[in-house]
Amino acid sequence: MNKDLPHDAAIQDPAWSFVLNGQPVSLHCAADQRLLTLLREHFGLAGAKPGCEVGRCGACVVWLDGQPANSCLLMAWQLQGRRITTIEALSQAPESVPVIAALAQCGGVQCGYCSPGMVMGLTYLHQQPGMDAANASALMCGHLCRCTGYGGIQRAIEVLFPAPACARRNSAGNS
Image 1 (spheres, helix red, strand yellow):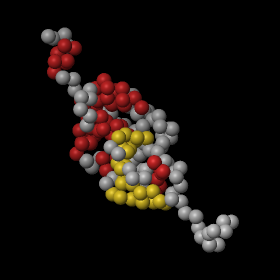
Image 2 (cartoon, rainbow, N blue to C red):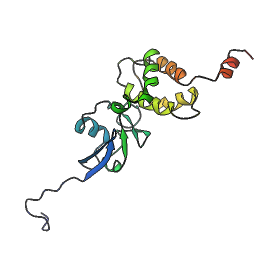
Image 3 (spheres, rainbow, N blue to C red):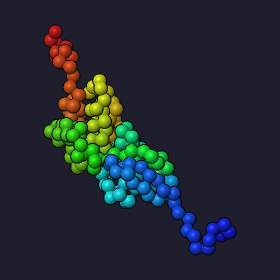
């Protein structure tokens, strides 16, 4: 027993303060608590899904300071002073509307387990100047889907990142 502490003093986990979906939050938890667990168990936000839990499947993607990040790899100590955006907030934002529509119209959604991570990733890419379908496809390779066979997802990417008219004419053999 530590002689410097009163007999009945409880040692508390540190408090971590950050912004979650635009709202300042603070919570006490162990430094090594995963953001994915905190989102689901402490905040009741179940959009980020546990998949591989080693950062390879993309089911748990959130935005950390506006950049895609795997919430299964982020620990509480890394959240201090940061901004976290989850699918619960992004799905209400206008920038996600074309992504959600493209995935739905192109058959890029079936069971929906991977959809939150896909929407987070594609919405981020859709906001990047100069992004094209080839680069978007390559950057989305870390988002795994067990249902769609990727055809619908690829079609959605092509809708979101259309080739310039001159490139379409050249690829069709027209000059």
